[in-house]
Image (cartoon, rainbow, N blue to C red; front, side, top):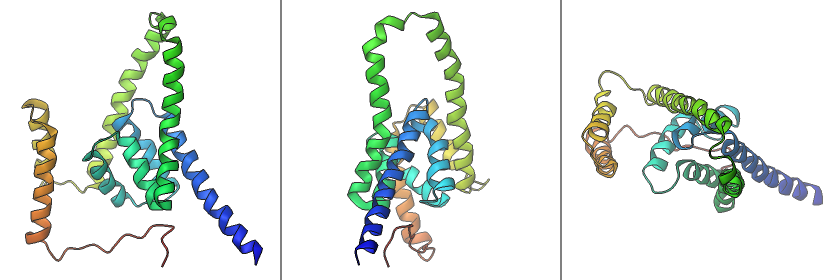
Length: 204
């Protein structure tokens, strides 16, 4: 009777350790933050671990971008919570922020010693274009996952124009998108309801 109980404990601990290790790697090896972290997060939680589906990832991405806070932190808390509730969210969040905290702390301690170093300046000049590519690539993949077509491409295009060229606050864009999505789901396609998503550790 003792061994099954011990196995359950170890299995639960493995989930915590695995989620912490996964998000620690994401926080450690992703340069640029924000959207630059999307490829690695998607690769780890969707393709490798299969904790969520690609469709859920797109939905979760929209939600985490619509609430205050850092994107990667919001994402890690959301996924960790789905895996193991509040404790899972806390463990995943710690795994995400700990690498940045330690690295920034080390840089702050030595910042004045290498700010004018030609090698360091050259390194950052090389990193900047790579960060741009890391942002563009997931945007293309997310567009495909969101099933963009000629009939709905005007939505992201108009958003880009409103924010990038006209200077409209993203807050108004988010509120308009929420209201439009609610009205569409409530009155236009009330019967197009998806089945509830089940996650690996959901209990029957």
